Length: 615
Ligand code: AGP
Image (cartoon, rainbow, N blue to C red; front, side, top):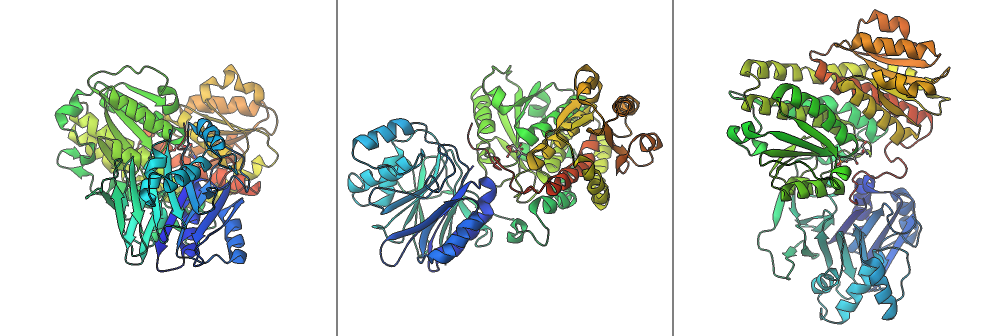
């Protein structure tokens, strides 16, 4: 949701803090702020509504000097995205500053208590309470120890937090705390760093310390980091993580936006994921941490996810049921959390989450675990909470996904789910080794097929023009491609703000057909598959009503070429079930062109955040 960074060291803090915020801006971009401890012994800061670029501009004129500081980029939960609600927040004395990611659930009670005890609160946020609670603790039980003051304050909080604190009376120190919101720290010869995730740290180190819930850390200018547990005792061996992301992976590298870059990175991401996966006994998936016997015993699977990752779950459901003959329930995490799942002693829960930090998904996973399920995570972000809390984790290795709308993680997650299906199907005897090998070989053709689609982006650019005067649009597909339609519609909505509805093509006549009128754009996914002719009939129905049909069709499909004004061609895909992995690339690119033609910021769509860490 929000992104936080902290630094203390030899160099000026502001350059790293701003660069760190830029790397974390995908987490929220309503407002941003920075606070440094200056040589005059005072805290000085700048904060404002708007983007990190606006903050950077203000910092240039404010000339903030200091080698210890914290910073924040916000996705508003409590309080409008205004200057005064931007973080950092200060205590009454102005000598303690905090930045917070998460939600303080008992903030109303705390604000009332703080007002009663003489504190003046300057914002409408839940987070500001923390600064005042640290102020009380600093002056009282903590006896001038900043870790103790933060620990004491956190004991009064309910909710979630990733927190960084500086205090003018504890020069050089940055203290951080974690509960329910991610936080990593790093110790380097040049200083110590903290951030909401590894992305800002990749340029300065390849090794980070991952904090667990209820842990605290003291960062000092000599680069040392000491981690403390909930009782304030030093943790001798905190969790660590090696970052194998190249720092340049989080930069634009010549592309106009991250969405363009991430769409283009899909072939390589899938190649990385598929590398060395086929062994003597089928698919190598050691990450599952389950024996063949355990896998063979699985009698039900829950696929749990949100948004785009949920679409992966829908496609995975079809493939797992078809190949492994195991019933799969695919649920939105936010729905499952209020249902009673039917769990047996052999139910597997698969959570799919790019960020590994989506609150609804984590809550569902914890609940399923509590019911005795093994939880397997398919995720992209190293060391994410999903990875740390699951029984097994498959990293999809797509590299940092900065654009808020998910593209390369989506296709990589689908490939990961296919590998899982193959592993299961072989382990439970539903598939022979030769079949597994053939599916794997087919999977390995996907990167080149996607490369081919990428070369045809001019087709998407042309088709985008058909949305120029549209107020709404309809996406249609059958079978696994009804999900391709849903994902294509989601992409369009989230980055172009143009309404898009997705429907199983055969259902159109039961309602959405009423939307059609001349010029209304309809995107129909109609590859060469067993339902091709049925979908062609639906296209006929669209055209008969004067609507504009944009088809996604397989090379050589003369029938579709004759019917539709525009066709986004895909090369022949060796398996019907793999078409979604190829076809979606056109729809991602189409959405991007439509959004750009409407002047939208494709990387940072309004109201959205990359990882939704609130329920
Ligand atoms: C993707 O384009 C969306 N921004 C969003 O739906 C996302 O997929 C969803 O919030 C789930 O995120 P996760 O995969 O990180 O859990």
